[in-house]
Image 1 (cartoon, rainbow, N blue to C red):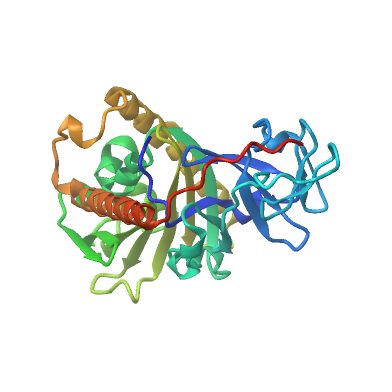
Image 2: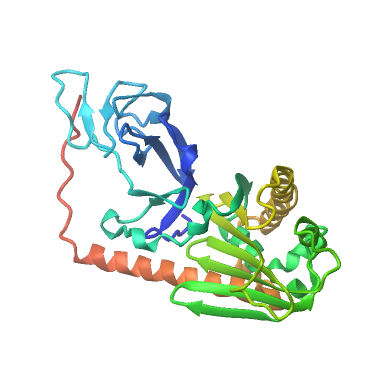
Length: 361
């Protein structure tokens, strides 16, 4: 089984993806069921009935209860069976679904896949700009083939832009120095390009063609795969803090399976905010880039790896790989530390009782 970091927050979807209807999702190889209850809270639980393993999303939702489509057991938002229509109506003790903590923040719904007692909402990465009314936001979701760390690598090293995204590349992404550093478990991979021109597409949408400017691209990675990418543009001699033109974006990857990934992206700009045509053009352009360029390349890359571990293939490393490599190593250590902690806890727990005779309905 693919090792995942469990005691952490994963994005499950944009807030408006979740309504009164049940929404099935596979995350970290687990079949899950989401719905928004009558109080507006997003609930998450296993999508597999513990009786005969029917998919609960094929059932019905009424009064905040999920009714199994096969035999009618009903479960509340915490995963407890609260109604058994069979026999004397007694509810088997084992008739309980695993439920998961959720938080709604930064226009996203987040899910904690590990120990619920460890769920800490302060650990959700900061993407407050996603709900900043002063910015104009484009956003979307895609599902792509390939391991989620391949998608992280794609953002941590922007050197691919010159070759995969015509018009977006700039010499700084391939030749410029990178500032790679780590604070706690957060990794930064930043590029500066002073007194130079922007890429053709960025110059066009900012109406800065032919001008020499100072600009910076900062990428912040938080485990397991949440990234903020910010482009700051200012007059020559300016700074990030005084930048007149900014694009703040998120690139958040959630593993669906070992070989497929959910990708939540957004771009928020502070310029030409009243230009609806520009907003539509940016949306179309980003969707085309992700769907027609990044996604097929990563799927092809994954297919060539044929399921092999990334490091077992002995990848050749280039200068631009430093940020992605640092992120991979941080994540590997976090997963190893969590596994060791869980093993110690299991060793310290009392022996399990002998299995009881299965209850009948």
